[in-house]
Length: 134
Image (tube, one colour):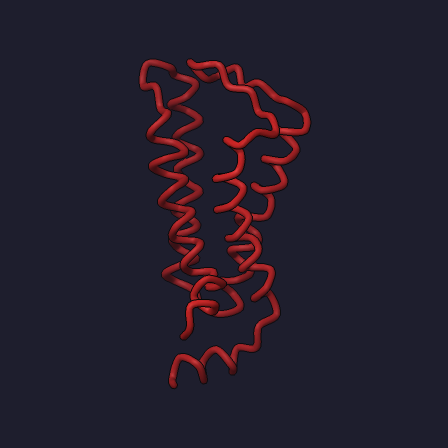
């Protein structure tokens, strides 16, 4: 498998995005004294469980479709929040969703996860099994 195939592998992006979402996106900004953040953290930490399930328990077309279905709506939601300039009221620190360089990393990881899923949506299952056997 060459580097281009690896770069467009949904499994790689599912794992990367799950890890980054968990540690950089959620745990590094978590304030345990804020009950609202604790409730939201609990819900948000379910997402990586689904993503890691898709990465390790599925393959081929099913994995690609799960990547697209998990990540695509999140990319859209980031863009909607930024376009509307939303301000979360649950956070301890002041956060404003807007189009800025800070939005690039989450859009990159979630966007690539969704893109690899869309690109593999209709992949031929026999082609993936032949590639795995070779």
